[in-house]
Image: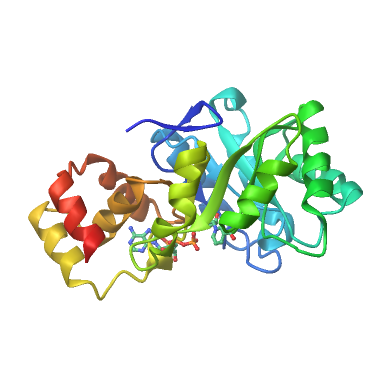
Length: 266
Ligand SMILES: NC(=O)c1ccc[n+]([C@@H]2O[C@H](COP(=O)([O-])OP(=O)(O)OC[C@H]3O[C@@H](n4cnc5c(N)ncnc54)[C@H](OP(=O)(O)O)[C@@H]3O)[C@@H](O)[C@H]2O)c1
């Protein structure tokens, strides 16, 4: 499997940061663990880090910034997201520039609209994001939590760019996207990034997943991640190095097409 966003190759799985450094506000207590886990992930070949201005009121971005200090920036692919109340032209600029400051970098690789907001014309937001592209503040732009029509509208609003990715909730327990937004993105060459790919750690309750995990001598959490990898780039979050090792184990599952189809149809 080879993954790319906007034609740039990225690791088969990325790492998410929701909950690192707090949730709705900053919490500095586990900073060291978070930075160590992110650095550990990078050392294991993960090069895609997902964050957002909203996570821990910006503190998650600061932790990402700390974790990449001293490393070769060009080898790391950072995604951040603009909150849905910041989608007017000047807000997009302010939000992006503040994210860059917290991340301690001159550019992000991918700048996403975190959630759609029908009260702000998509054309205005995309035009403002295209300015960020022109100024080199981001390499690619995209959307998150957009359905098919919203993604189409965003594509049509692009003048000098394309929507490189749509980040959606996608996991074995929530496969709604498989019959709607995923095929649309596949057709248009938009990368699908899967958030909550291991169902926020709640991985019980599927007999077929358990059976397949047994057959391939892996854990159900690994099988569930492997499933999602077939049609997306998952960005699981963990602050635990052992969990990260588990997640990386999903990369070695050589599932047959037949078994994938059994999982997909059950
Ligand atoms: N665009 C959006 O609107 C949106 C929404 C939600 C999330 N996201 C992004 O997607 C990322 C991932 O989604 P998520 O954090 O909601 O959920 P997730 O990745 O499906 O699950 C994370 C949870 O699973 C646990 N976990 C990780 N590895 C495990 C393992 N091997 N065994 C058992 N439990 C394990 C983690 O705990 P430990 O830390 O203890 O390992 C954490 O509680 C987020 O961090 C964020 O970057 C984006």
